[in-house]
Length: 63
Image (cartoon, rainbow, N blue to C red; front, side, top):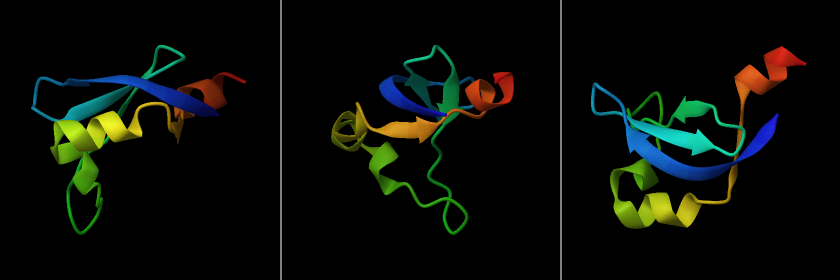
């Protein structure tokens, strides 16, 4: 289910986790060539993505 990004935090390994409006989290790693998310590497990039949506697998599975 599509859920808005409401914040971010770093996990124990230093990877960024998007905090979703549903209360779940989703990693948003920049790990080329597999995952290209250069926006996550800067504060400005992360701020620009606040309010955009990600698919929350946990919410989808709960349905």
